[in-house]
Image (cartoon, rainbow, N blue to C red; front, side):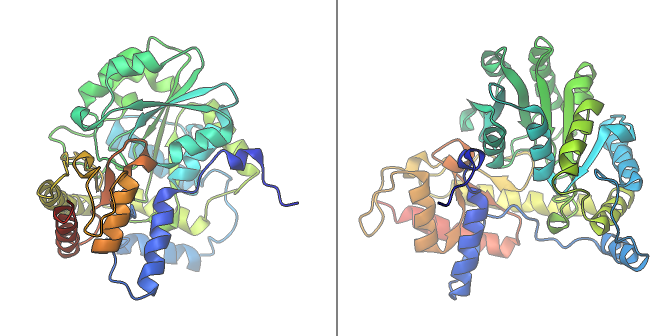
Length: 400
């Protein structure tokens, strides 16, 4: 009799990847689909990073490495944390993994067990609750709507903490909303956390370099140094360096957590790809000036998409301060009817309508823990974004 594990039964397939697969299938059928569901920069990996990978292959760097990263890459990561975040980590405090998702998976699987609670602000990245569920823990969802610019307040965090709280997950800038916590906002959350010494803090900073706020990016261990010993700072090269397929994520944090993550990794994937590690070393050590130009391109796209979606009947799109997503509130579309008489009852109905009527793919808000809304990735050209947003405007205008 076919049987899968109870742990597998506690999780769902990724909604974002499911939509990406759907878009690929429709395009193969010849449909003119504009995919705004994938969180992947359209920029290519810079040539100096590619060259480092090619050199690594030619130099025979194709063997096993240390299980959680080469000494060279750990040194580069330590340099990045010091340069960008004013954080000092020794090699034994750094973990290198096969992508940011793998970093999160290792950290939570190595530290969470039945009875543990993990506080997750919503909207959240789709994988956070499922990883906690897989580990046997309990996700505790704290919602922050568009009226709060999708950021939780200190009093909400205080109310959510219990003696069972193991971790608090923070993601700034956010996937799916682009919401970004200022240094002052992190200080206020830190004031709550320092009153609860049993709580660990995991901060997912993957979109650090896609930043539009008037004040500089800050991470919580930087503004609250007294929380350093219980904070795991997670990052990677996927988004800023357009290296999604290279699969390198990393973290800096307490040595006991890093050691536990290495133990788990030694019995799962072993080391990340040696070639990708060489490329990531070059990325972190190389000239960072190209990030400024790309960030400005993302800013222009953000402004275009926010303006056009706010002109769509029934949508309210806050202006994000980072990442390359917008998260329009779609409450004004719920309960209305499509031209063929179907009622839009949920945000999943709405994105299915956009796909069928407008050939535009997005991801419904319920997958991110806060509905009715949907996520749009603007990591594509302005020409394509104008076309997609026009189709969404027309689809919304056609609702009765």
